Length: 230
Image (cartoon, rainbow, N blue to C red):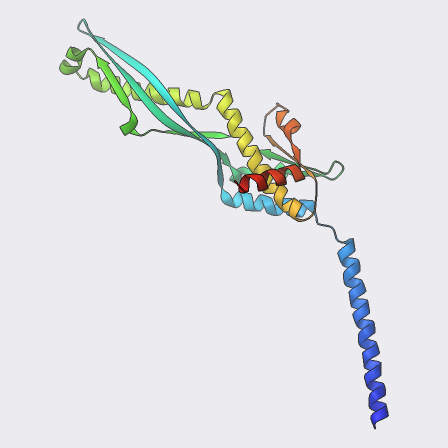
């Protein structure tokens, strides 16, 4: 009885060894042959960014100084307003879609096209505004002061938005947005062991500066790690 059982156990052991070796070979071959799909990773990154809805990469504070004047009944009244305000530069990530993220296998380049930067605000704190007036008689006798205040506030807001939309702050905001988006796409790709180039540009922007300034994914990943450690 013992010998037949021993033979059966030996046969089972051999079968187990063969099955185990075959499984190991299959897993090893699959692991060696499998490579991460950059398009799938980029698509997942895109969905993650869309879920954030809006990105605020930059904000800046400006000061408007405006003066309004009124003349009535031979009298003159003027009032100067100093109005500080903060503008926010936002990127509507919800407008991104799959056609805005293009993978070029030939050059190993991922190109992301962003919607234009939107300027919101200005946010003004009335407690921080300062006003200086002249021509008190006209303001005491008429509603000139209220009219001057309304005119100054409207003009101050226009001035703040004009400053906020100047080329220099818009460029700063675009650069900050581009860096944030580069990291959002680059880091998952780097974590998967890929090394493509990530290029970020803005829709309708003919300036190729963004294209020239694009970096390899390792540079973006290293920059992100450096900023995170600060």
